[in-house]
Length: 247
Image (cartoon, rainbow, N blue to C red; front, side, top):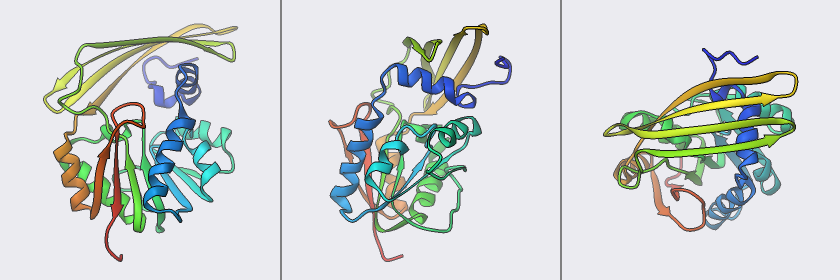
């Protein structure tokens, strides 16, 4: 049974997968677009670290294009599903602000607006410095941002009903501006399964509305040349950076 008082969607990775898989999230297409950006800037890239990898939806496809693929996430509920579905890909628990693997990759990616979980410029700066420490010179960093202050839509209501492997999940969300610098999304879930009946839980996600200038400061301070690109990736575009220097 779901513990309604102490559960969030990131604690139940199989339900998370049922929602986004059932809604048709295009992990393959998104991974392909990110791979094109990495290859166009670092054609010889062979290794990728996915920070905020979740249940491994993107890792699955990165593994088809890169020799070394690894993932990091903060929540064991997501990592449990990634380990079960992708036993050949190393994934581990880590905080994007401070993880330390002691080695370098040709590319680091942070997708599905996971970066929005940070709070304030200092955390954004610290996180990009952590990413930079794990990149080779000339390595590529790809970040999918949450909405910006100027294109965030307060009052947005979303909803879906999906059925995967006899489990039906209904999800309804309402998103408002929590402050001048953050959004708050309240989400309610109903989960119905044969033999278990109907269970329900609610979740709240507060995500920072970082502006372009905040990303620019963080990229510059961490030692990247970078650009913001739109048009080939569903959502709010991508920031793509290349690490400068010889260290």
